[in-house]
Length: 408
Image (cartoon, rainbow, N blue to C red; front, side):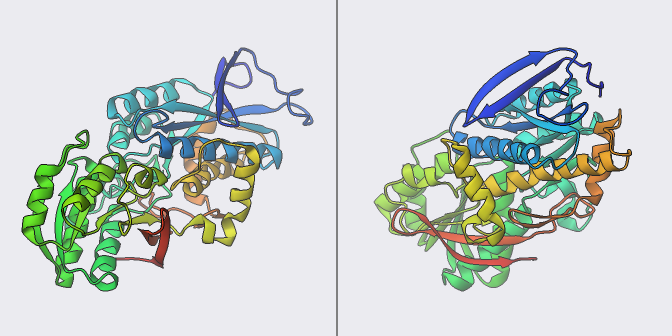
């Protein structure tokens, strides 16, 4: 970190619009009304701001922006002004890796929020870790990201000390989904599909393990290309299998047409994970009625802890909804803000010259009551909040059916 004299390129978000400002030898002592010098600290945000998954990405971008603005308004860290720097990863690992390097090269960035996709995160983790730059994802659920490739055998090892998340793992989400479908929906024959991406494949594998252990039967398995929109071939296989439901490990851009084409042939529900839990799934699917999705946490609309977030988001005037990860993004951003607060307090009320490193050290101490509930991280960097919710499409909207703290 350079102190006040560094060249700063920041992205300032106002009601969803992006404005870039550049300046050198920055002194914010007269920029915010505070006494004495104000140091600008930047939090990077990586998400798919354009493309098929932009509905979720824009919710992430806006929610991070709201957290920074709230911290500034409330003077959460005296002497510190927070800004966010959003970069579009287009849900592409190669672009995410490039964005990671951009965050690393900007020494005003002390932490990164994101990304949405586990596959993108796999490309970002190592460079961010090598640079000692904290990363907190509100959406990644791939278990291996925090517990290593051998977690399934019980050999859990944290691969990267800089990586944290406010979303729980696919190990938990897939198991919760299987339990809900078998015990609550009373469905015991499932056709299993995935999109071959790290998120979808991992989720489907976790679902399969728990579903079969409960007594359920997987009557067929297949893979789809997430870029395809014609699924009639696999729908024919599903119909012949006698399945009572399809479980799809993937995301809503392919999940929506898959569901619609499925119901053109056979009236059974499609179930998926949090990558399906979006309003756009319903917009893209005229036959979404009865479909099921799980998502991390409890609906923010049902949480007393989220009332202020919802009201502030509306007041801020963002044109895009906060979507499935809004609350988790706010908490992910706030965890970095809290780490900055700890680092400043430990340095006699001033930002240390090595703030990026001190923020990483402070993450282990972060603990607060967030939008989604209590926020803290375990020894792997995983959230300690394992609340899950099952939703079903009813009357053109997602309706929560059951929420519980789940541990397989």
